[in-house]
Image (tube, rainbow, N blue to C red; front, top):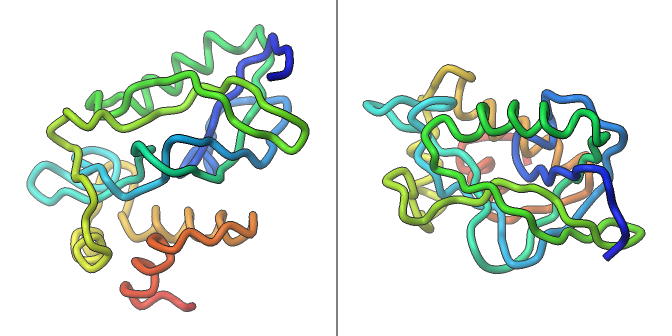
Length: 176
């Protein structure tokens, strides 16, 4: 693990394409021990309690390719406060510090993993069910399918093929 004074943030969903905070650099990164999954019923950002959507979480097992953002030490407290307010609206995530592999070595990064005990935890849903839930769902941050489209576009830009996400995208009638 390389020496670090700066804060690193690991993004695997909307944080990859809409971090919302100032950063010094961004690099491709892999986090082991967790995988990206539509495992959270969204009651706020991409759905409502009456008509939940689905959002991504880091669920245990496997590994996840994403993006790591380096934040200058003088901005760390402000960025953590911003991300906690954004990601912890319903406390379905738990902040973790976890090693991530960058092209030139490992760093500890803050990430937001799903709390499996939370009532919004959806577990492993079949891709057909994911597509059904997302179709027509909308919340304060917009339409659920737009969230999927933006995530897919960014994964494609980075050359990351995420089979389950791309399957849901295809089921929703998106271009291959």
